[in-house]
Length: 379
Ligand SMILES: *Cc1c(COP(=O)(O)O)cnc(C)c1O
Image 1 (cartoon, helix red, strand yellow):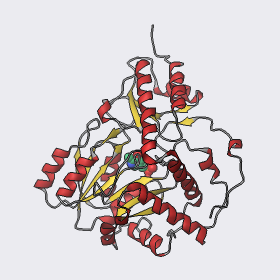
Image 2 (tube, protein in one colour; image 1 turned 180 degrees about the vertical axis):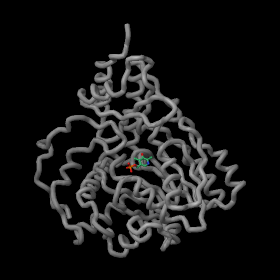
Image 3 (tube, rainbow, N blue to C red; image 1 turned 90 degrees about the vertical axis):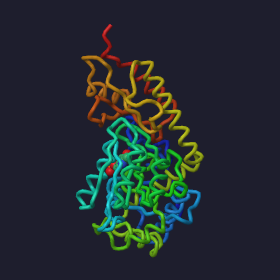
Image 4 (cartoon, rainbow, N blue to C red; image 1 turned 90 degrees about the horizontal axis):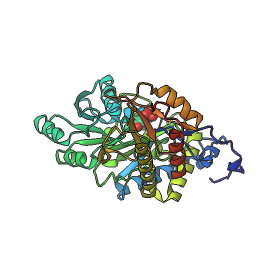
């Protein structure tokens, strides 16, 4: 399986800039090098690799791996969320979506497209999802069968109180779906401890692979009840799982082979770094250093520190008539950094991510790059 490629990764070209975006993000040269070969998809080598990846993902997700399985699904993160939403809620089911940003809203939107009876509990863009209100709703409306929530709302960088949501969900006997797209692999979470039924993430976020497929961690007991429920053929979660399980790592339809190779390397690098705990520490150091430095340069964060995840930070535009994000963006790109526009509707913001193959020295260089601008300061 490990027919190593004879390539000196240091000879690979450097990237023209560092991506400080929440995915696709900066990957290591070894991750990129893993894609320099074509591999066949139907033979044992490849299938064993897929099975190994699936097993390692479950190990990463919980200390009770026997109760869970994992499914890989083609497409970007949204496809995988849609696969879950469209495959696990029976026609008689009712979904409650907790929202506080664009990704929560997207779940509600896909449920609507799929014709699923859905109610939304919105907390606005700068507050955590409201667990008290959730509990009141569940008391009042006993017909809700499924809950969906985003762990880290990448719109703002907010980390939602997932353990509190999970507690209420369990207490009221609901099926819990968590979009952990931008946190899985970078923020410790144990799906069995929280009794999460479906957790969704993607190859190109905290695990630091390249885009092409997503990951669903599923509680077996719940997944087993989902046969035949899918509202889509290609996004049928149960069928994808059954094929992977029964055919020992086979995907239905073309699998993103290069991305899977890169992902295997990315997982290995996550393990070498010391696992999710160490990666969480690196991201946290990056994020704190970023915020301290930006404060010194006169920037304010959108969120208070206690609501802030270590994944991505939203900064308010400086209070200056001559500041323009477009100019700032272009100048920062020339400095070697790609930053991210804001996504909320209530305040002008831009975002800086610090996940990916990004280290403290990069953050220091970034801060120097920002200091070199400050063109909007009037003295
Ligand atoms: C990135 C992301 C997604 C998926 O977005 P894609 O563009 O489809 O990859 C979904 N939810 C959250 C919270 C995300 O950060």
